[in-house]
Image (cartoon, rainbow, N blue to C red):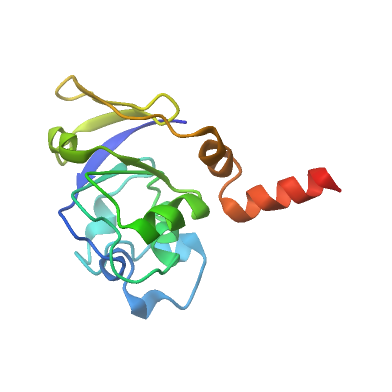
Length: 166
C-alpha cells in the first residue's frame, strides 16, 4: 500500500456535504460521484486533481452525515488516500469500509502543504514529504484493516471470506 501524489490541502471540519453535496447523491457509482467531489467546498476543485493525488485535511475530516457516498466520491476522483489531523468517527469507518485508505497524523499534518509531493506507505506507517524531505511516522495499519482495503472494502472482503468458507 504505497502511494505517491500531489497534496491537495483542505482545512478543518470539512463535512460530508462539502465532500459530496446532497444534490449529487442520485448515484452510488464512484466515477459519477467523483466528478462532483468537493463541489460543496469549491465547484472547480476536481479540475485540479490528477488520479493518484493525496488529500491532506485538518481536524475532524468527514464530519456531518454518515453518507457512504463521501469516501466513494474521493475514490471516484482518483484520491486513494486521505491524510488528516483527525477524522470524524463515522467517516473513518465508512472510509475503510468503502476501500479508502486513511492515515491520521495529528499536528504533524502541518508539514504537508498544498502542492507538496507526498509519498506514503500505509503498511509501514511512513509518510514522506518529498518536497521538504520531512517524514511522519504513525502506527501502521492493523492487518485486518489492511485485508479489508486489499479486498476493495468491507463488502468484497466479506464475500471472499464467505466464498472461501463454502
